[in-house]
Image (tube, rainbow, N blue to C red; front, top):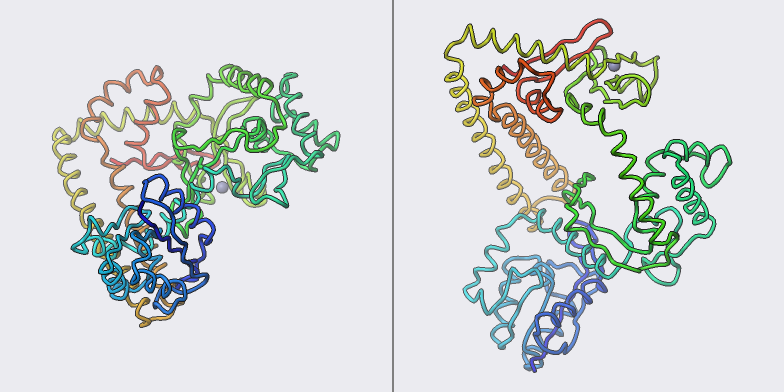
Length: 480
Ligand SMILES: [Zn+2]
């Protein structure tokens, strides 16, 4: 049986980021060795809080010594940057260890000395962007914790984190009572809003309750004792943005903690929720046709779409919603009114356009071509910014610039890249199927009242740039 050495280093590295503990790396790698059937773990070498820039680390020194005596056959690390952050030195290290007949491979699957004997792996490793590398590491690490059923983040209402076991949830009786009350009220027929009012009136639980909190409590599997995580992930390591992952990628670990609600009650509530949603489904479908495109003419802010229980659905100024009438007025415009004027107007504009421009279809094709060129230029700009980022990283690595300077310049490059991407997005959206759509639009628009909300939304996205609403008029700005 082969003897496997594991190397772990905590990465409070040159960027001052700390994203994984020695402990997490160890258990990750032990699992890896077992799953890949590599052999028996001979020893774990570790360097706690040592920079990866040089090789003056007790753990790695001992490792090299043991390798020279042939004490193990395989060396496993999480990735090459664990071994060292300097390109040339890491290369030397790998060469010497491999000379002793040790096979080196990484958990991230990007280096294996058996496969990458010509150091191809190293080149491809180092040519990749450092920033991307970091953000992926966070994800791999988090996922692993989740699979063990650890609860990451703040405990949900009704639970506290255990003082004895890391990331373990324990029932908080005071709050659990409130959770059960919420389930009971819902099954008695009350809606989210009404439940929050009842709780506030009776002074149960928090002082203030909102609809989102009630809904979250009624839908989360955490209350039947499961841990559902990986619902969203961070887009990048510096960004606060998250993206929702498809359900297939969620990690559900059963029975990780004591339930507050029994499975039967939970299922009943979910069925009831679906039933109630269907009941109010009709006007819901119509609402989002202009979402994101309607702006207040006075404060220039995007208007919120509002679904109302009484009266018509529509859009209101977000400044008014947030700061009240002193800041701006309501500017309410109903969905159906907007739909009527916009679609009859689109029809007129389009038929005029086609009449006065018999060659418009060809012209649109021409415009498309020009925009494609613009997009190409933007893509090149992105490429060159990425290259600059890499050079910047090398400069930082070799100490030519300070950490502060690296951070600020890197941020600048990143925001430039974001801007280019946004612009590409905008251009792509504008050209999307426009040519084909034109004729089709004219045909379908004649009977626009029968169009489904979805089709309307598509049409609006193609031809409308934005809609501005003042207290007295509605203006439609076209993409044409
Ligand atoms: Zn406003």
